[in-house]
Image 1: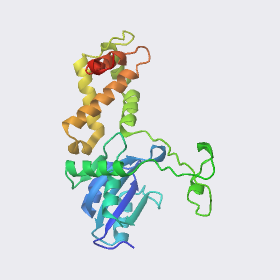
Image 2 (image 1 turned 90 degrees about the horizontal axis):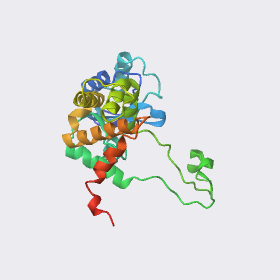
Image 3 (image 1 turned 180 degrees about the horizontal axis):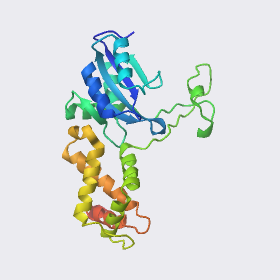
Image 4 (image 1 turned 60 degrees about the horizontal axis):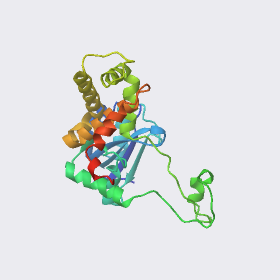
Amino acid sequence: METLGEYIHLRITTEQLDLDKLVDFLKNELDVICIVREFGKFNKEHIHSTIKLKTAKTTFLDRLKRTFPLIKGNGFISMKSVKNWDSNIRYCYKGTPNDYPDIYYTIHTEEEWKNFYQSWWNTNREVIKTKTKKTTTEEVNMGCQNDPSSNEVFIVKRQRVMTWSEKTAKAFLLDYRPLAQAIWFFHGDNNYEPINDLVWCQDEVASYLLKCLGQTAKAIDDFIFERMYTGLYTYILISCPTSNLYRKKAVERLGKFRDKLMP
């Protein structure tokens, strides 16, 4: 049972909630260390947070559910006492192998949370166990993996989940198709119509990215933003269905190290 003064790991499913409102609520009701958004199995949005209670657990949960009536049952929220501080905080900041965590609030500095992120991926890899009986990935199930009475050990292959960057890029193509088409036009595909000029289009992409980052943008430096923007912009070019617009970009990048290639 969680008591006052204990660190607690809080997880809430948030895909139907106003996330900014939830973050403000948690900061007012709890002593919050961090709040990080993730997309889990089937891209289900949720947050991980390390917190301390200011009131009894039942009081906090009553206030939470009154404020957010969509939170119902254990499928929406879980609270567990933190047994290992270092392991828990690294888990909260783990993000994905290709992206930093989507931070909505933190007391840590950028250097600190980046170190936690790096530490997680330095020590956690795909779970692979040696088996006494060969099997295909299709035959694997999690029940067998956790059954201590079984003599069979399976290679567990995690289901790949889209990264935040991939999900953001796909949403851009769906919601801002005319803007993507204008970018394709300015990069040489005359099948589409221009919208203003290329610089305006690029500014709109930057505005979209910053909007998607939300409060997380406060914890992201210019170098990371540039890298995320470049990734999104390259994805837009690659997605052009009528021209290989990405080839020019690829050649430009190649030119930066072509002289290093073997003859």
